[in-house]
Length: 450
Ligand code: SF4
Ligand code: SF4
Image (cartoon, rainbow, N blue to C red; front, side):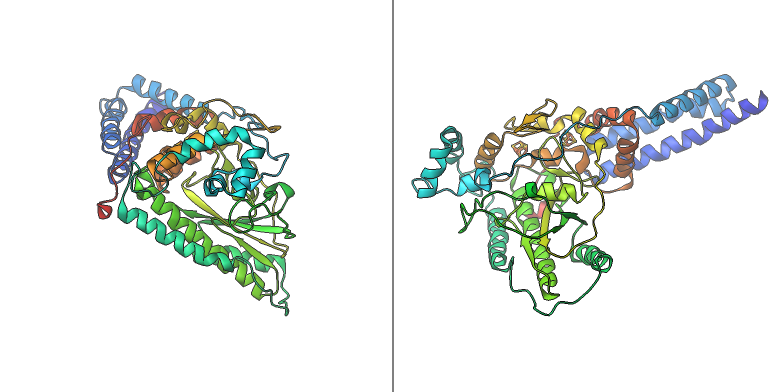
């Protein structure tokens, strides 16, 4: 018995030190994230939580020490107990191809009174009134918009101007002299080189019909049926800067989005040209010139899941990323995708993005059947109307998603808990609310933008 008591008191000493270190570290992380309220809360818990453990050790209260030891073991067991994670929260495969003409960017590009405009609303009369709502607003990067910022909007324009120059390079002549190489070698080179070029994560998948839009909705090829014979895709993510995202929906967000569309476009152009130079046909899919639905391709390449807000969420940066895709005839090395059910399960309960959305475009409900497929769908019309009012691409949902926190030891430990413990998954969102707030306020623009 004495041995058990000695062990319990020693455990109390170790636990009090461990709790204090973890919470003091968390305090520092919150402080450097400029989350003062979270830092104070972590500091208070860091001072209070170790007290009973320290007292039990210091005064040699054997019974108290034993109770604390048993309590911690039972709590630990509960957290590692393999409660079931639902496996079919969302369906995987869309039944039909999406027509790019239906997405908001395409509808925004329709010139009132033009042939395309008339034809579109003849086919979808119910959409005209919805779209007139966003046409009444100031518009993206307009000086009359809510978050007008002349420098940030000019910088956004500059990035989109550069992307425009890339558009003619998405496809090109293929070297008739082909370099023979095996799939393994090419795949590992592309992964390493892609990261060197600036991609955060990169992987491959076989292309399926549902990845492609049925028709082009933007640019000169408007209305053309999409034909692409490539068999494989390279999908990659680029990171959106945390500080720029945190002040969403202010102007930093649209500036950062444009920057990352440019960066992902540049990487895609380089990879596509690299493949063509080696004798394999390849096409880059960049902002404003897509043939396919990037989030679907990236999900099938294993980069993440499509969550409640309808964006790809990656395990480490959540939705705080932009995507790039290259399609090619080269048979890249693919692997079977492992569905990240824990992410969808977390989304099912979290609902934070739905609560913070200024236009109430994100549903708090469980996924519903949309065109025969169970999934979440946001109200893209009300979302886009808010963009046109704000003058930016809003991104408040992206900024507040618990998965969007920075890539550091504290947040990675929480992501580990979410992945492996169904019970921890239930308390992670309330914990996030406790430290960051359920509806956190938009942060100030980075100092250099003022
Ligand atoms: S905020 Fe929560 S519910 Fe929304 S996408 Fe992120 S994890 Fe899912
Ligand atoms: S971008 Fe803004 S308006 Fe659109 S869904 Fe996200 S929070 Fe809502």
